[in-house]
Length: 243
Image (cartoon, rainbow, N blue to C red; front, side, top):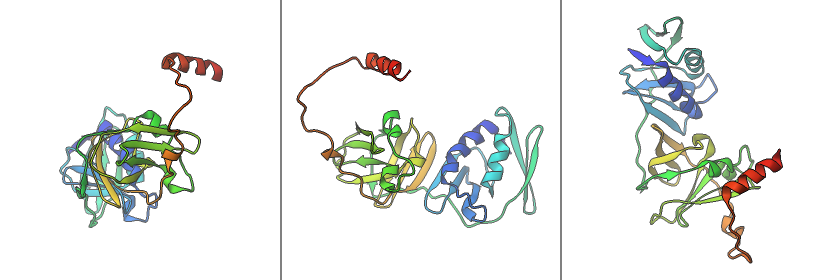
């Protein structure tokens, strides 16, 4: 069985987000099963379909380091002997131990199902805070009642309209499972978890349990003046000011 290195690199970059760094934990491993590669950190999981009918698991950090040391144009092959898997490319190889673990990836659909896509966007992603002691600020708010996507780092508040639904709930998705160009598809959620597909990566993620700031109170309901300006021209002027 041969797998393209570029495919593995792309998958591992995203699967790293739901892998524990503690090498003594079963959740620090990378799993190949039922035509997919996946990781779990105990609560959240990430998976990508891959052309592979193998069933095994290896230490994620060691496997990731080896794959990223290879040329993306190469392929790797896998062979097994007892509890050891040999992973070989054209010029490199590594032996890693694998074991039998009762850990599987389950495709889940929760009670609240969203028909359509939710596109995050650079501006919203960039204003999500990081390492804030208030955990809710380290995530993205989906306000289904107001049909808004909201983020803030306490200095910048970004609000973006999203698709309309009949739901009247708010949920907070952790930043670490999102990207600037994320488009969430096949979205469903309950009070604790959300599942979605983003760039062929299927995720089942624990939501942030917290109360997002009442952002509506910050936004003025009316303005004394309404000024229209050219966005590109303003951007160029601001760049010159920074320089």
